[in-house]
Length: 194
Image (cartoon, rainbow, N blue to C red; front, side):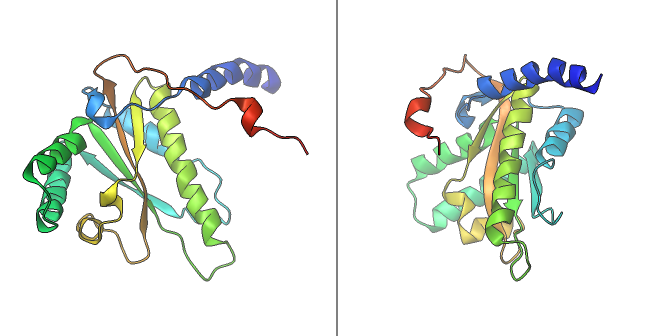
């Protein structure tokens, strides 16, 4: 009975995985996920391999006013760095285009038996699950780690603690236009058998 249930779910899940694609944040619009959909996306994100049950990641959600406050932080950082005002306006528009942005923060711990690398890969798996869950719910998403993921002022202003790193900013919304498929790798070029 359980095998039959898995066989019915399997092809649908595989279809989701095989059809997922990214959409630039600037090409997104409303609506974004509802409160309950966002909760499901985050729960899916947290269902990843996690050696040692450490949960070496956390989430920061940016929506509505939070997106605008985040944009203000970026504008301030760019202004201090001497960036051209037209580029500053482009960045503001870019980070406020998608209805929802999730920052996945890697909280890897050192000096424990679980290697930091495994903890960081778990955070990467969280990002991928968020992308896939968003797609399964009919949204588009984009996983980015732009300059602001590494900028010390931005990291401090959004509440990262010492040792924490941004695994990704994931933008989620509805595409303004049809999302075009991109070329995918030739499997014959990347698969070997030992």
